Length: 353
Image (cartoon, rainbow, N blue to C red; front, side):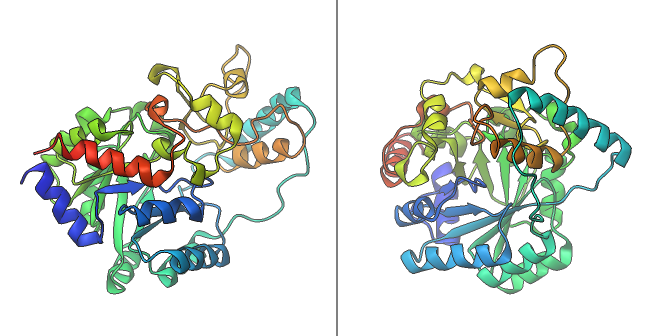
């Protein structure tokens, strides 16, 4: 099957006019962006990591009031806490002490994080086109419940072992995340995240030669050339995030958007300083400070996420938003999202067979 044929089959199955999916970026997927993507013929998305069940329902309700297009909702799979509590406390205390150099903290986070099980039930009630997972797999019973309601499951994978495990567990598509991708690394075992750094160019044919289900390519794709290359290498669709961060519908903070402008691929960095989990970002002074001699390791997740939120309440020396940035950041433009997607697919269509 050719790249064009795979893309057509994928679009037919998931109700799309173009095989381009918005990455479900937690904290950067407002309704305006998802609607713009869906109305352009792609698949809108929401990263629901921090969303309560009520917030999930309200967000989807607003989306459905404005678009009948395809929609993906994403959650993180909880990772078993393997570190000893004493070690976690020691790391958190060191991170807290280091954060004092950026000024006084604000009030600590007291609102409990949404329970994963309740989020999953809310996703079922919302009935999006796709529910996607990152950093692990859903339980088999939950996958059966998704499929019983006609909801597809897309699983993010960074290695073939992860992809095969997801396929065997019933995933309808695999999101192949290359190391170029902005935001969080989707490895199943976060302690090994620094060592799963395969580029998308190598990952796609490796997946395509071993998987039966469609592959969605993610990481470093921001124009038609990237889309065409991904389809040629075995993908059926692409997922883009950084390419949309400067679009007006995303409402990215001005200092974050400015950090993306002209950002060279090699200048992006992987870091744990915002959340405790490895992610690719722009090299802000705050991020670089944690790499100076004598700086401690960030606290584990979610302690580092909570510490970052606390210091954001108390000082302007900590980045007010996490400056996620994929290696394609310099290709992002400030055009409307619909225009970005239309050009991306038009240019790709002239290159694929």
